[in-house]
Image 1 (spheres, rainbow, N blue to C red):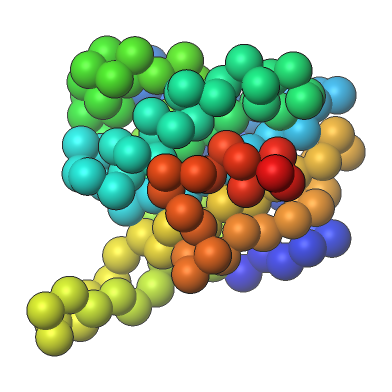
Image 2 (image 1 turned 180 degrees about the horizontal axis):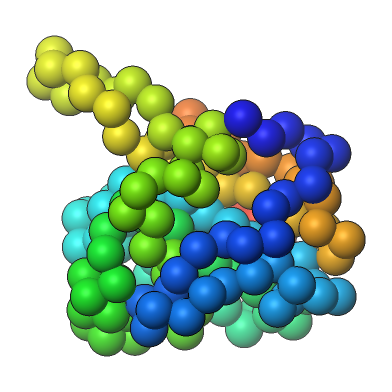
Amino acid sequence: MLNIGDKAPEVLGRNEKGEEIRLSDFKGKKVVLYFYPKDMTPGCTQQACNLRDNHQALKKAGYEVLGVSVDDEKRHQNFIEKHELPFTLIADTDHRLTELFGAWGEKSMYGRKYMGTLRTTFIIDEEGKIERIIRPKEIKVKEHAAQILGK
């Protein structure tokens, strides 16, 4: 599990187009790397749309947004098209990145326990170090951009 001050990995994974995404692609910018459970679900859609609606403010503040879930590239493409998302989604189908960042863990729904993605956001500074972590219990999906911007 990565913590504040740790260096983020160079290779982040493949996006919705199958292209390799590297941290160095965003040199000189802060990266919002947000892990979410699943495309097309209510909470994840609210979070993505909040980031979409505030995308210009985030860019103006020097942030690049990257979403990560264990959904595949095709599902990411559909999610992006349906909600007109202006940012990249990483298809972490093997959970490698999600586990490395500590965003994979035990969840519970209706008394049933299972493993899944823990909604977590990492702010990575211009040098590739983790500057801030917004933990699962802190994230407000309808106000996530304001949380990132510190408003």
